[in-house]
Amino acid sequence: MPKTTLNSVDAYIAAQPEATRPMLTSVRNAIRKAVPKAEESISYKMPAYKLRAEPLLYFAGWKHHISLYPLTATMLAAFKDEIAPYKVHKSTIRFPLSEPTPLKLIARLAKFRADEVTQRAKADSAH
Image (cartoon, rainbow, N blue to C red; front, top):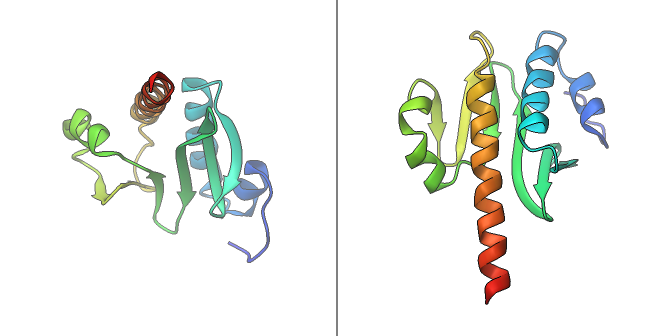
């Protein structure tokens, strides 16, 4: 990726290698469809989504995979079997470019994460 300042997800995707762009676009669309109220931006030089001003998800394109962040401990436990085929390191899951993108899984992860953020916001406002 060129060392430029990217100020939109469209610009981020356009700056990626041509072979990666369709997968990135599919991941983006899956997240947006799963959590339509999420705000899209660039944060930490990658596509980012926030819900109620709280970080929701990030994704990034790499040479051999696409990463999705963060996977919380609750997400790791809830999706243990489904994410088992993928490389998971700390709070990151990597989807190889050489395999079909698991868009339904990504959408379910996004919805689950949105529920986590919403529940935390409700708990915070109750105190």
